[in-house]
Length: 289
Length: 262
Image (cartoon, rainbow over the protein chains, first blue to last red):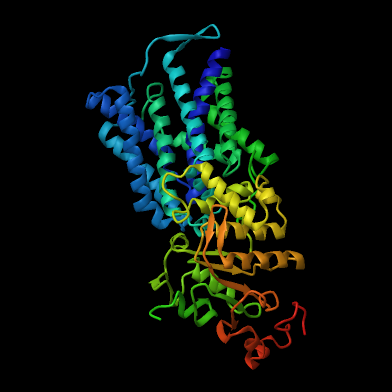
């Protein structure tokens, strides 16, 4: 059971970390709360379903194509709908929720409310700590961790990453330093949505697809970002692990109360925030000016 | 002359009922160092923000090398060759000093195609060297003293190798020896030459201060603002004796004084 807990925690933690770091990035750089973020995750799953079962593509090409398509949709939504309203925070919230709802309803129209599933990328089992684990789990975890590491490296070691971090810290000053902040925001949107789509694509073979599957992760991502400290990527990753672990523990130790996992993890968040209102790695809202 | 190097014409900026900049026209020639002085609230800093594209004017136009730059976003203005420092220093607090200076080195103006991070870092180091804080390169920006922050601002501004440098109160809060050092590096920058990988060719400057004494040894010409208008312009000695200027400063502080009331 320990191995099961470990594997489930790792899967959920890495999915949440992918979603939450993307959410944090676009929040930091463009100063928008993108409530449609996890809808991109849902879209990627459905695109893979369409490409494999409807068009008969192989799983791997279907995954890559889906991620690319989601990025295009996300960037267009950002440029056309979100960026012009960027300064009006409430409007951005409404627009992004509306966007997520539109995606959800479109999936309902095309695929109905049925549970769908996607074939696995790899079959067979491997033995981890004496327990047989489906290879798909291992591949998913490995790929998620690799992508997270790649995003981290881009942010910390490249010119683009420096530009993104500078813009996230102080958009106005980055602008006065000659950074095209509008372009950087668009690129960040592409990275964040690619992360969400990749997370969706990688878990699609493990999870069940349904049009409302964006809502629960969204709640959890919001909790993680607040728990980790707004604007801290390290905080988001650690908070993802905490929330995923508490979810898994509830599910495994209290199987009849599995529906409480969300409530329990939000409870954990509230307790931490009572002790540290700025979140684990928050910067206690130091003035940007 | 067909068109001035940098030219502001009939610029107006209102904040609610307050007209911060009220029909300002001025021009700066290539390689000229102009001091812009005026009592607090004269509209100097607003003028800088307008010139850098951080604020949009209600009326009037700003031209740089004959090109209309009014309404352009700040980053485009920077890439055309204007850089500025601001009265309130705002470093990227959660980055080391060197990364702070690497950011402007990323601007399209400053970088060559395919340049590696290493080379950008070297260039940033040269800017820090020029500003005199290269020994602090790896410190986080949040640890800097006020004087060093001012130097960091300077390093960030010259990193794009601008043709026009606008310095807003660069001497503010500096002690006499720090002021002297800064004045020296401003002169050195204006004289031009190579500073490591950075190149300066007699950069034109607008230096803002609320008193003239710091500027006297540096500037070619002085423009005086009061209540959003330009009330005098000319050689430093002429301006000091201008009755309107004396009137504007009367009861506040001497034009040449050290900030204490006369």
